[in-house]
Length: 145
Image (cartoon, rainbow, N blue to C red; front, top):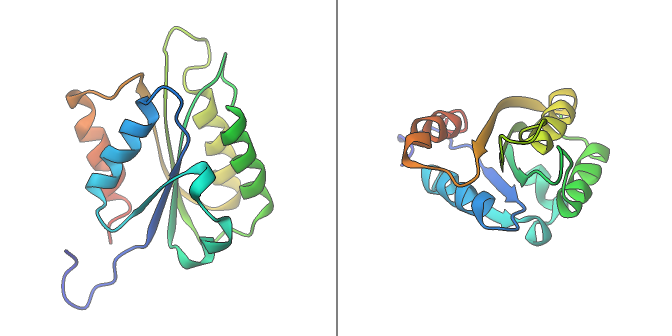
């Protein structure tokens, strides 16, 4: 609960998940940011972005560092929008046995760094574990103000 007189940051968490790992991570972040809206990529209306102070993108990585099709579509749309006012973050899941661990996170990171106020990235090996909670809490804390 924000302190009296303080404004809370309006956050959209938009994610794409296939096997459930990224969904679980998105839900864990949303539980740490109770005022945030949680959306699958196909449920989020990009026309509402001006209503938000922050955007957090979640994706898994396909193949050897590529964006999955639904994440790539979101990426291309965000790239065309005026998002310089947004605080942003990106998180993702992947497997460390690939040369480009969580490469999709890196793609979003580079674009969001250039176009928005990128605050943080987070990469998790497959399903997040209790040992990852301090990292999730630190990530979420950057969007609480």
